[in-house]
Length: 374
Image (cartoon, rainbow, N blue to C red; front, side, top):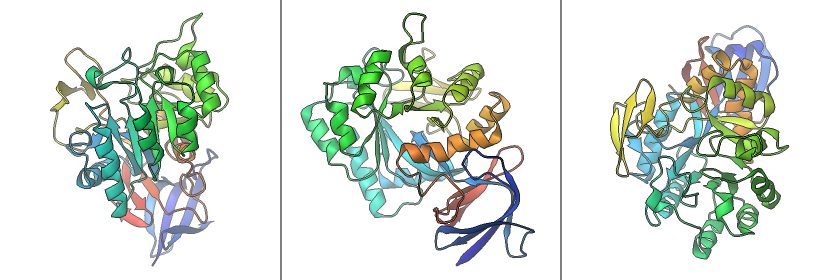
């Protein structure tokens, strides 16, 4: 089957300027020729075409929370909900839980991948190997050091895995072993110093989870994680651009300092693309009010956010050019996961995952490996 897409405006994911009146040929789940010209009669016509958005941190959607239901069915529901915000591909995210609950998440993703679940890239484990001093909304009782048996199990995971840890809490050599096993290691919920991050980066640390959040604020004589992320030559960072987690001025600063290294995540919870406005998160009541999810003490509890909203925030409030904001949702996260040669671009030979938007940057469907979604 050959499918033709005609876009009035096309962003190819490179961060370069948009092209106009483009025709994209799709065949057997891959992008064929990308040309310029009038719309063929049989083409699907869209206002804006971009590479399929990639969300590397999504905890839930469509009234489902991955921590509460670590199953292939829940992953399918979350992926479907994420597509409401234009996300073609996701890493379902399992946060700190008591005991060894994270092992259920690994089993669920393994089963879902055996079913070829559309849009599923792998898994993001955010904890439990974090700093007890920066738990955020994570249940503090579940945070613990990594043991040798944990490390051995993680090393055997055979699919794409992102792991958020507090590097200062881990024995020397841990990150080196994880990285050697192909795991994408990020620092988060941490009090690491700038020198701690440098040491971790030398062992294979790839980046930071939700920049500015669950980490010490920068100070004049203690630049810490934030400033080191901004100034480091290679470290990536995810950022939650919902207007609640990070002030738009800090979004502007991060985007200016981290060109090609900053990417957008939603950190979405079950309320996104769902009907629930109040829910329990492993014993903590969470309430949605004015687009903000918080626990009883006001602690932010994930986000009520779609990828299209994050892109819109970067453009409208942070002053980022649209082509750069699109790259933060596409090319950069693809490169983070080592998938930069097959996802994140609209180019010949790449997987046919696209996100369609209107002129207000609202998601209007797309394709996942050539299969349409609304």
